[in-house]
Length: 111
Image (cartoon, rainbow, N blue to C red; front, top):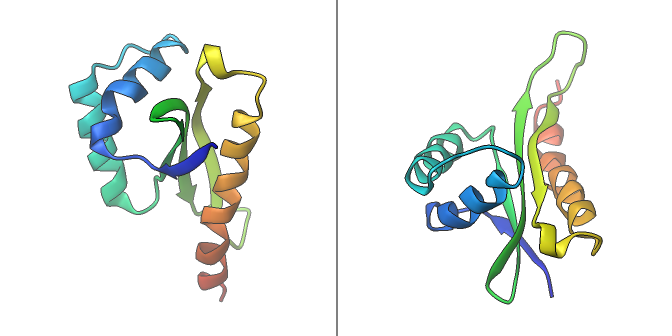
């Protein structure tokens, strides 16, 4: 079973490995620092797809107000599925979760 959960600094090595597959060299220590920084904003959730203790994918998002919209907009800033886990619907699961995370925040921001 695939679990989608918030990332923690302890996931930094796995995230570093996943980002490497996109061509981004982010050392685990730096990844852990960024995870903490982004978590502290409250507007930058990062979710990890995990199965059998192995990280299979990650999605990073940013919630922001936009001039042209009344409500905040969620942007996906990074999405990667491990090359060995592709074509199993993990990317689709990771793209559903931003909507789940965003729903209560948009409802609370109504004027």
